[in-house]
Image (cartoon, rainbow, N blue to C red; front, side, top):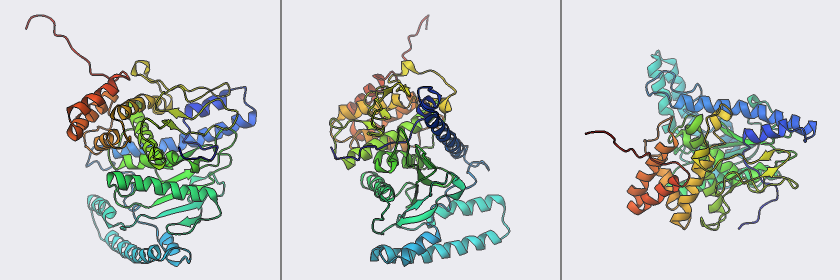
Length: 436
């Protein structure tokens, strides 16, 4: 297994932050820091919920697209392209592409402004906006910014540190965010022929050093970018874990494949999908087959002295940590322990462990690399058009079984069905009674 820096962390679930904030064994400073992080967490989770709710409204609804849907987010901002085109330490090929794309973007903006100037109906304007993604550049650009410890998301992304094709900076967090975003993009393109996070070469923006002592990392659905805190007492170095970036950027991929309402079982599936692709990306970077991998999400995230190994375990949900300062990992591994809750948008982080265990079961049963059969099955499930916005665990399971049979035959379908059966997500059997 590849060598890691010691304190790598993944996106932190709210139940863990709440436990830290509420535990009197922790110092007031630590509890206050957790409360602050929890407040910011609630803010971006609310954005995510609204984003997916808007995406999953019936087609044709005038309110079906968010106010700043990704129509023009797919076009790299002029200032980024200008910076790349003018930067002396950017490689010649990237600089030439940036100059070409800068001219292209200017033309697109001019056309867009001309179109806006015409008198059109609101439906016609919506149609124009819907066409914008097809005019994006053919190259995916990465850019990393310094948030300078500002916790106001209105000030994102911050000051540019490193852009596509530029040499490594002196800021190690920026270099990690840049390189690991590249690993995510390579995985999606090499394995699934998916270009960037929207299949249209959408640029990938990241901001490091967000807030002070901010112990989390997240995908901001409004700004359409990654945001990383530096961590503090328990959790730190989010940019160093490729599964952090893989998990969070996959939320954006989910927007463009099968948008799942971010609440209840569909929300847990949303989180599950991000864990699945995050763990596959990590395993690919480390060249690990399913049977050799540890299946830990947020490996090495806990600071020395904390009793635990990660934030989540896909192999054994509920065993990632057990520390008196923030309790025991609460994730159940079987659907028999599923209970409706109003916390955490209906337990989206809590109950993702159930389908996570099913994916682990399927990957181990298939053997080899997790993305070869299990991953391919889950990917085609997302791309099938058969996943409803309010999809339940059993509905999702049924589609994975069907896709496994289409891709690999009846034996593979039986393997996937058993993987779900073993976590309690089973088809009910009915016995007819009475006279026919």
